[in-house]
Image (tube, rainbow, N blue to C red; front, side, top):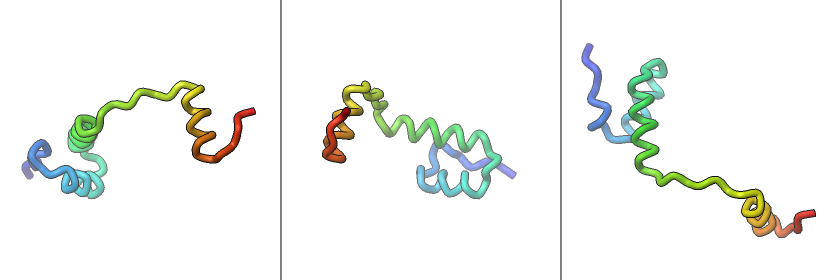
Length: 63
């Protein structure tokens, strides 16, 4: 059996393939690489930014 071309497969189809073939490491790695390429890397928050975000979301003051 020949392997599908994971690079040309639409991402959603690749995701479905991975769910049906959970032991296919190659397909999984291609999927992860392509997903990371689509999303810009986010910088982690500092503690101060996290506290400010929580205050904004929940309307609470940090103690």
